[in-house]
Image 1 (spheres, helix red, strand yellow):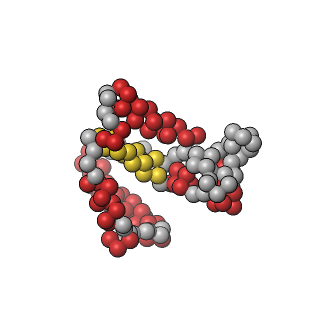
Image 2: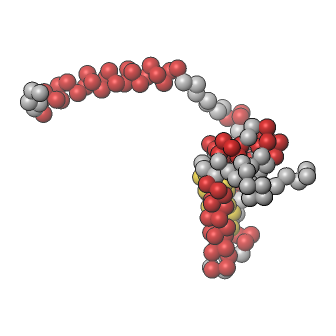
Length: 143
């Protein structure tokens, strides 16, 4: 291998970066991109949520179900603020932003059964010992 000096590297680097950029741009153009427009958002509801008065506001960004571990984190935070620091529960507002696999927690038992969500996310139903075919984190009221 030839000796590479700083000058020779810096003279070749821009061409390499340009090539890499061109390759990256080519592959990205083939990917579908979802762009939300203002009309797609429930702006009034979001504004009401962000402008609501509270002494403490917390946001949890959840992407993994992790056997519901994030629910313990939220509960621990609420208990610590309320019982540890004496902050009234009405003065604590918590938002859990679920996306990616964690978004499955928003769906009812029908979806969990139809799409075998428990098998996909490796969630075991403690009642049956098998992959969950129901949302064990948010029981259905339909019975």
